[in-house]
Length: 403
Image (cartoon, rainbow, N blue to C red; front, side, top):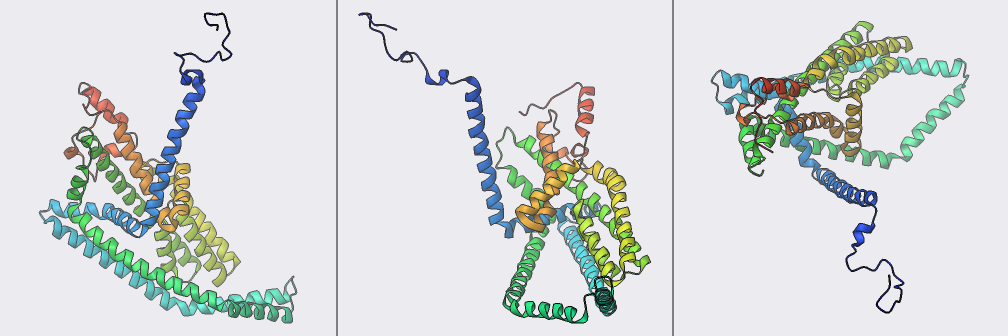
């Protein structure tokens, strides 16, 4: 480029009409735009996760109360259908649920107390057998070596007495937090059962008017999916507990009722919950009985897990909320890392709600929110979108005006 006198400009990029952005390759501009948006999304998610962790004392009880509300809501609705006032119906169901829970806990504690002497006797017998095997078996440990090992164990406990005391104090503090969380859960559950519709309507007022109906429908379908999930999981948990409990009773393992109850509670954490609690049953059988009994219990646990994974999961949970096993495992792992046992318990229900809600938001045809049955909504189930599309096409293919 030269001026009027014929001199050449040393900077060929200097042009009054040139835009610096136009000189950047398009692929790099698109990558940069995606990168900073990705970083903003990750930062927002990090803030949300941090906030949930910071408010976990409130978030976890509210989430558990929502799960319990999904479990008890059908019973409340059934009483309302027979002309029982909703507040009274919620009180009846809640008191009945607490009575069942209290009776079950009392029964488990009584069974554990009654079986504890036998457990101690069998445990002492097993320890003596282990001692005899260590001294007279292939290892040939020797009486002096065995006694030295026992002395070292006692010395270790004495040296770490302060740490053990601190752990006991921490456990006492945790029990206090659990009691506080239980009271808060119960308090929130009362309002969810008696006035859940009003709470949801109040929350919807914060949504923009032009998207409010679609978000309302998505939320209702998400709760319907949660109801289906909790109901199916409870049935699976009962089958797991009964199957493993019968097997433990047949082979003569002590504390059958407490172990079966533990399996029932663990089954609410899909895939890994029943496996871990079944492993506890195998360990108890190994310690209190013998190696052969433990192998038999392990075979029973594996058989029940196969029944769950190949029959109950596809038949019940598959119809309620269709989630890939890999998605379930990853969700449980992420929940366990983020919030411990509570996170593992709540991860899959959250994934089920998001699955149903997002599918509803992406759907082109939405009913009126008042027409969505939050307890039996078919559109919240897998493959219901296609059925609804076919139904809509049969009626002329009318689409909702909502964006």
